[in-house]
Image (cartoon, rainbow, N blue to C red; front, side):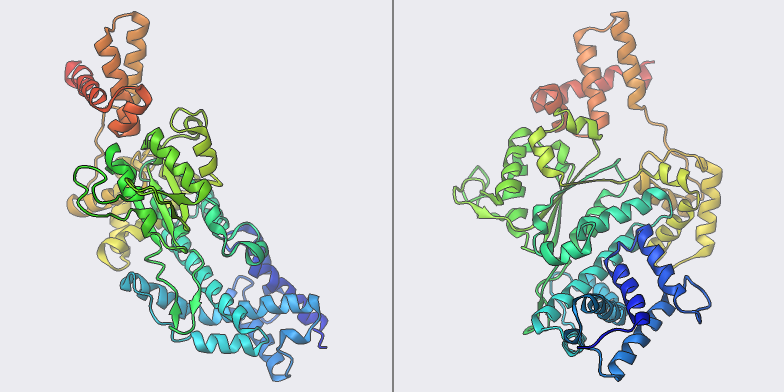
Length: 496
């Protein structure tokens, strides 16, 4: 049996902590600084590249001395050495994983070959890992890199709210304890459904995609690629885009002849989702109770039925949902069934509004503008970013509320590039309508038409869809639409 020296054990123990820490957490930053502090020759304790190099030199020394085999050590040393070997192999492959991710995004559903897989598996088995475990660690390294890639790249921001969001998303993929995830949950995460809350345009879809594209996907050694493309494993559906009569078909599919117009069998998104995949249901608060009951069955029993078919079909993916409704409306049972809500939110993640992010850290605006400008013109541009920022600071101003959040900011940048100015519209706010309704009720000046029209219009301004208005008001869809239109005529600014 081999033994690590006291110096090696101290270094590799800290590396073990780093491997199991959330990379977006304060704990990980603390561990990185501790590791860096062990190497006096480092000129900058924040130089993580030097940390990687120093850890690698320690492992190279073990290899040169014939001591780089986890099976030759006792339990405690083997534990920290295993983590250190994985730390090393992960950082050896980081650039190759990043290229694979970018290429896979372009390739779409076809899983690409992994040319470096054989060498990586060979290195792991050379360190004493059995072949099955080497395959799993390769797949897990790829999963780790994908999660970091999509969370870090697509959810920029230095505000406290965004840092907490990135930390929460990482925990959603790997749990708060990577050790528990590795031992028990790496192939069981489909039982953990997720609810994303946030204002319209705040980035809930981006957060959902980061989760959905970061699931564990096994490596197929015979084919030389991962079992499926992560681009194929994530399916998104905005429920507000479909009338109530078609939502079930889009979700669960239908059999030929199930209803008028069903001229052939149709596979819904639950049918199309793979065992390693995730389904994202945006605007979940818009669906009626019958659909909620069927979705509840899918979450609880992992089965569903196509419309017009009585044969249960399995669902093995993960479910992510999002709504712009506030949490209190979900909990009180008005927007959705309580049993559905509680079964849906194994994890509840709040995506912060843009105004809060900028208030917490004014530099957030500049960082986001860099991302948006690069996305629009295809390359970073200090000139354009400076132009856009100066115009925003002038009008609409640094303290602007950004009711459309990040989505509005993107259109603001485009408007400035086109016209050199962005002047937000001043829509009739729901709060103003609410005030009018309250005043009318108190003055007892509203007839039934004005009261119901104003109430339905207020609901529509808040929830955006006729289906939501119908559900909350207890009216059928056609009647709800009629009262919304009446409310628009009665409460139009031109009438004042």
